[in-house]
Length: 256
Image 1 (cartoon, helix red, strand yellow):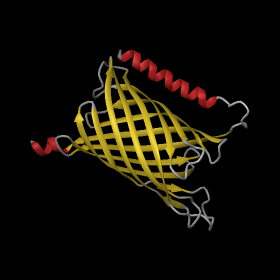
Image 2 (cartoon, helix red, strand yellow):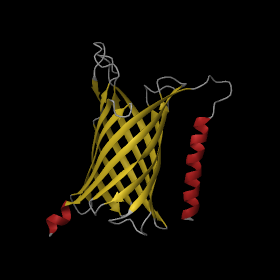
Image 3 (tube, one colour):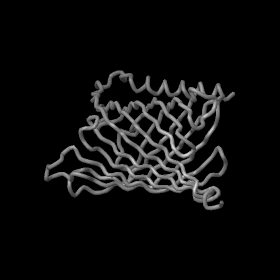
Image 4 (cartoon, one colour):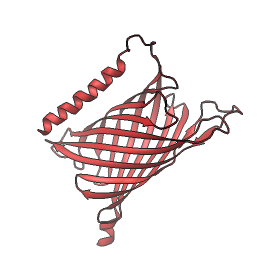
């Protein structure tokens, strides 16, 4: 039963990409820009109580591979572990975005953004692999790079399916090399959103290594396909991602 659900999810993800690649009959041709990027991320999950955790994400994102700064991404949250297979997280995020119009007096070089966010994470197993279903909701106050632009509120809904597959062992434990695969779909809504309700689709394939019970690393390729300012303009981004995951159990250390 679990295997059949897994196959259905993979089939739906493949279908979503095939739909994106098709041109609607009678519609103008899509204009797709190809770009490259480098994303470096540091993820933290610190246990501070029996079922309580501090959660953090800190990213440096550069465009044109590594030539220009794109974003400094800071996400903070509190996680409550209901069971080993279900947890809820909520918090704030404060991304800083670098404009492409650096030095132009009509535009701000860096624009801050503010978000509230909530997340539901479901964990399951399929044979030796781990499966993650992540639902994330965001309320975003954003503005344009043009100086004096007002902040507007919109909403984003994200679903990500992730699997970790051990390669040199039957379990995900220290010393294990594993394959990491995920697909994440982004939908947005709100007054500022007119035609571009589909915002992004990110597909990632990489390798990870579990150093010890506190540290793991992942390196891989991510493909992002998203809107770019009009109904028929899109950005096709090829991204190299390197991430460090850091888990510390302060609660157990305190209880000893």
